[in-house]
Length: 283
Image (cartoon, rainbow, N blue to C red):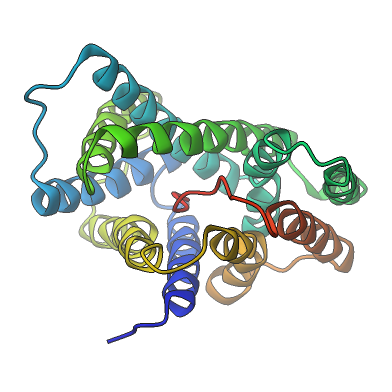
């Protein structure tokens, strides 16, 4: 049994990005919307069975927070999977990470945090320097996912204060799944969705991208300092780039790797020695 909280967080990060790589490998067979639905359906069933949450005695404000949390979770997944379908994993997660990074910096009153904003901006500019290799729509979807991730972080904290254990997450996953369902009616979104191979791998994506990391981080956060957790989570963009290389043979240029490094360094700097805003990564 793994007891080191740092190792558990690293396992969670690797699992999330491995799941993203597996999902992207299926985009020739099924739409991103269908994969998001399969991922959320898998995690919802497991989380509901595990937590067995109840809505009895909940106030209207509790339900509104829960709905907002679920909406941010669903839209974040939809947007980032649409981005994955158009641009490399590492670049998509790097751009998406601007959302949590911005939230961390905005919550700070330290003037030197402007340095980290500038470093992150350098990373974005470096990505733009090779614009010919990037699909503009994919970049926009990643930015939307980043905004949703920031909302997810804020609403996750509010949900955690109102619901015990995994109750809030389980119910929010159900809300997110229901929110995604109408998108299956758009175009040919469901084509290939019922293929046994797609169903099996879609369930694997749900386990890798949701159940495993949530479980690892839940245990790790019992003994891990928030600042240390934030620094570890800053490795997400680099982990995504590595997953792209290992799972789907998706390479980045030297300039793009430098851009990823700038955003990772900016996030580490912004979260070091201060309370962190990051919550378990949902990507």
